[in-house]
Every structure is written in structure tokens, then in C-alpha cells.
Amino acid sequence: MYKFSPSFSGAARPLALAALSLAVAGALAFPQGAQASGFQLKENTAKGMGRAYAGSATAGGDVSVVVNNPAAMTLLDGTYFQADVTAVNFGTQFHGSAHDAQGRPISGGDGGDGGTTLPVPALFFATKFADRWHLGAGFSVPFGFQTEYDRNWVGRYNAVKSHFQSLDATLSLSYDVTDDFTLGASAIAQKTSAELTSAVNFNAVGLGLVRQGVAAGAIPPAMGAALAQQVGLLVPPGSDGFAKIKGDDWGYGWQLGAFWKLTPQDRLAFNYRSKIDHTLSGTANFQVPANVTALLSNPTVAALLAGAGGLPFQHTSGKAKFTTPATASFSYWHQAEKFGLGIDLAWTKWDVFKDLRVQYGNPAQPDSVEAYNWRNTWYASVGGDYYVNDKLTLRAGVAIDTTPTYNATRTARVPDSTRQFATVGLGYKASEHFEINASYAHIFVNKAHVNNTSSTGDVMTGNFDDYGNLLSLSAQYKF
Image (spheres, helix red, strand yellow):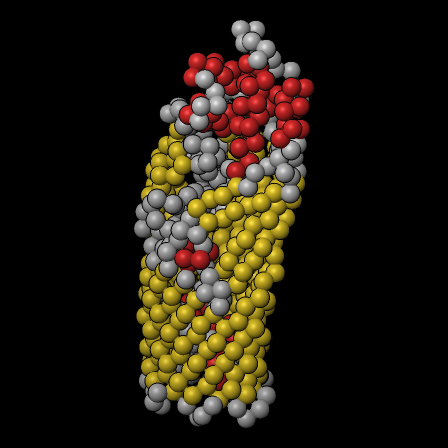
């Protein structure tokens, strides 16, 4: 068991133990929420990706409109099944350094490649069941990301693993108001899950709480210096814990779409998708180093913690409110004999993500609060199809996707910046009933600058070099 130096008086010992116990309790505010423009995924259609999602709701022949714009089902004459899968390959490499609140360098490597390769599936059904009515159902992944760095890297107090995913089940209906105008609506059931991990710097929180006590007048300056020295002896640099938070929730939303046939060659569509509110509920688990465990088992510390509500760093429940954002999109398509040309413009209302507050079931663990204050974003694309013959179609497109993050709030969880897309694709109609599509996209990402301070005062400064590759395949059968 760790003991305080005999030079401390009996009155000073409880104060020292109290300061350190409050310090380690303060570390519970450390695990942060995920932050990234990479939340949103458009990867639910191989055919659309080939033209950078230009004409996503107006090009025709794509059953993914069931979830992207229900009114566009008017272009699907018959009964369809379509399955898509996209391999999302994202890479990110950190170049920089980190130091703690005392200015001391933090040991560790650069984290390796924090990216990953994951499949994003989608499945759609649509049918025309009456003269002017269409019905559709879809499964898709509209939001998601994952990063994971080496556990001992220099940014471990900011993030180690971040995984976030929303799975949607969508039921859509459309009605042809006239021969040239259609309205559609969807009901959406969404399951959102998250897993966040990070290291906990017990040395930094201990020293930080001592400084706060001195600044607040609760600890005399002379005693504060002695307490800081004792904290350094009891919990030296490198006394890392580990925190993991997992949670999930079901939420419900809707969307409305409209589709116009402006001329025999020109089409325009608009879609609005609602935000979906969640209260993620799950567990918080902690690994505590041996020296901190020994300190917490000290009878004086245990008595102080009992008076403060109990022992911190115990496995407990947790919950956090989170909202997936509303989106609005316009889609245009011009159809000619040998080619088609499309334009898409989409807006995402990311300013709903102002902060993330995690509340714990253990009363000894205070809420963790992290401010984000994201801004709204735009996505714009242009692309088209070239019809080589009745069976083979070639596609290409370019796009730009702005980021809701900025230097002051960007973290290592998803260190994204504004992205540019270049895409190619092809489609092959094997028969009147069966069609396959394949597309590839490369994502160029602006250098992501980061100067992020964790809640324990650890500062990570540098740049992330990011890239992305997407490979998508789909199969469609028409009855």
C-alpha cells in the first residue's frame, strides 16, 4: 500500500488523500464522444457511386431511391430486388507530438494507421402495386465510422478506438399526383450504437486537481506544492488507466420526397429527411493501474470516497443523448440518347451536435461533457452515364464534401477535413431481368490539422494525412 511522506502532518494527510481521490474521480470525465464528418455514409448504391451520386434520385433504374427519395420510385415500373455492398477503406496517419499539462512530452509512437476497411451493406425492394402507387422497403447504413490506434500511442489520452454506426430499416410509399409529379414518404426505424475507448492519465488528473484546489483557495499554496510532489510519487507519469463506453438505442424518423418530370429529357427531385433523436444506453468499464488501486484501498481514501458517494472507476451503466442530423437534397438529371448528365446538391444540419454528455449510474462518477459545436455542411457532385450499347454503361463523376469540424474542435477520433471524390463505374445488363454494377471512388482529403486538448490537459499537436478508397458492387433483379 502506498503511504504519504512522514513530513506531512496528520491534518495534511486527509487533505492530500481527498485531493487525489477527487482527481481520480475527475478522470471519469475523460472518455469523449466521437467527432467526425465521416459520420455520414452515402455508400448505399454502386450505380450512384459511379457518377459520384449525381442524379441519385433522378437517373432512374436504381432501387436505392427507396431510402434516398421515395418519390423517385415512380421511375421503377415493376417489382425489383437490389443488393449492394461497398468496401470502405479509410486510412489516417498522425504526424506530430503530444505533451501533458506540465509540458512534459508524452511517450509513445504515432499510432500507426488509424483507419480500417469495413463493408457497408444495403438491401432494397420496390414494387408498383397499383396504377399510381409504389411501395418500397430498404435496409441501409446512413451513418458510421471507425478508427483505432495503437494502444500506447502519443494520442492515447485523446482516443484509442472509436466505433459508431446507425442501421436503418425504411418503409416507403409514393403516389403519382399527375403524370409529371409524384410525392413520396418514408417511415424510418434506426438503431444507433457506439463504442469509445481511451487511456486515462491519472498523473495528469491528480496534478490538475491539486492546481485547481490551490487556485480556488481550498488548498494553501505551500501545501499544494507538497501535495503535487506526493501525487507525482504515488501516481507517476505513465500511470495509465483505460476506459471503454458502449451503448445503443432505437430511434424513429421520417422523410418526404417530391419528383418532377420537367420535360421528356429533364427531371428534378427534392428530399427532406428528419433528424432522429437517441438516448444511447449501455455500460462503462474501467481498467485501473495497480498503484491507483492500492491508493483507493487506503482506509482514509476509502472513507473519503464513501462520504463523496462511493468508489469511482467501477463498472457501471451510462447513457448519452445523441441526434443523427436532418438532411435536404436536390437531384437533377438530363437524359439524352447516348448519355445522361446529373447534378446533386445536399445539405446536412450538423449543428444539432453541440456537445456530448455521458451520465453514469454510479453516483461517484461525474458526468463527462465534451463540446463540439459543429457547423452545417454541403455536398455537391456532377457526373453522368455513357451508353456504349444496350448492355454496357460507363460512368464517371466528381464531388466535394465539406466538413463540420474545424481546427479548434477536431480530434483524433475521426480526424477528417473537406473531401473531394473522383469516381468511375460500369453497369452490365445481362438480361431484361438481371443487372450488375461496379464502381470505384478515390477520396482526396485536405490535411487535417489538430491542436486538441483532452480533459486531463494533454495536448496533441500535428496533422493527420487521410485518404479513402471505395469499391462497390450491386446486383438487381426485376420481375
